[in-house]
Amino acid sequence: MSATTTLIYTTPADAVLCREIVDYLSGPGFPALQGIIVEVTEGVVTLRGPVKSFYARQLLVNGCQRVPHVTGVLDELHVVGRNRSRRPQLAE
Image (cartoon, rainbow, N blue to C red; front, side):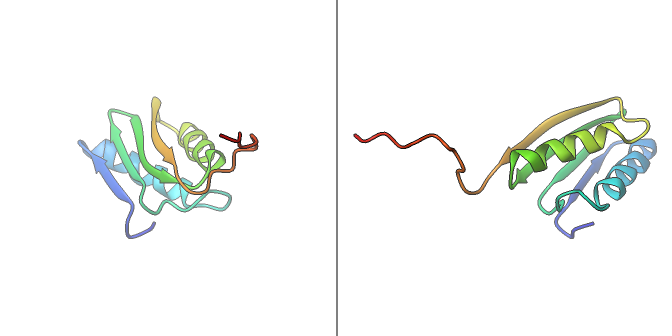
């Protein structure tokens, strides 16, 4: 787990689930959790923070949904970085 990943939970069961989520998302194939806040409340996971791409966002959200005992995922992640839009720029 990155030193800048923040874990938030309210009960001992949520703490265990939070750790399981972070352990799973720290595995191969997932983007770094640096700067991500993982909050668990009664089995519902909220992810907050910056990610480098929409694909990274999808990986993290879908990864959370695969962890046993997760009852829901709230996606509050935001994509930062270069604008890779393929739309041509219009002249003014």
